[in-house]
Image (cartoon, rainbow, N blue to C red):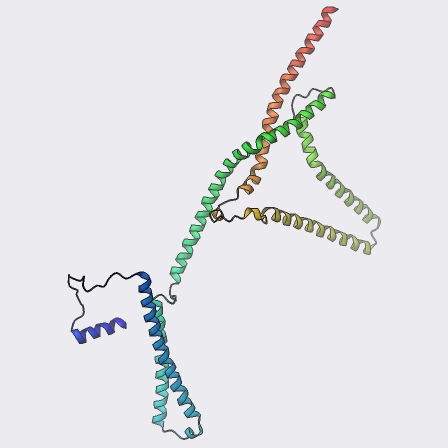
Length: 332
């Protein structure tokens, strides 16, 4: 509609549809305007236009209220001719149509200048959402690949930082075991006995708990067989089982909460450096994940080294025993 008005005005005043500028336009074009000044001029003009439109709307509202008061007064309670009544109805309806058209035009103009979002940009929003989704998935994949590579590098970091101390501790434990075996008159050829002992110590508590639970179950079954007629005691047993389940659930929840406090609620993990907030993984958590495997590899290395030493020691002891037996035979 604006373009049609401009074209009509050009044809009426200048009898042409287009204007062409001269080649020498240095004196016509003003100096270069800054972006802030251009935005200020556009906003000032737009606010002025909106103020004029608001003034016209308020004027129409006041006129309508004035006419409404006139019609509502007692002096207006007279019979109106059909033509006059029809004229009033048409006026009201046409005014309503004009206000709706003005509102639509105002909305379109604000949308055009970017002061109000469009309603028909659903496809554009869907496209932006898909782009953001694929970008996020790509970043997740890249971070996952980087995390797997970083774990390999962190293994070497753990070996360099914690490996020597951990090896010394494990070597001392195995040396004490070998010393105890020699003191008992045994010559261990490998460390299988030590490994089995460590496994038994680790699983001993869980096995004891399982055995204790089985004994309680067996005892409960025997008591139930002896006292089949006691409904009240059966209800007590069910209540006890429910209480046990509740205790187990509480223990699991307490463990999960303690893990959360230990891992995620630690304020030392937060950093004031904005670059650290974009880190794809936490190095400390990654170290905790791979530390067990690294320690197993270090234990295997210690086992291999001490096993080789045991083989050499047993070989030297067997040779010494053989020489001692030969010497006794020669004396005889």
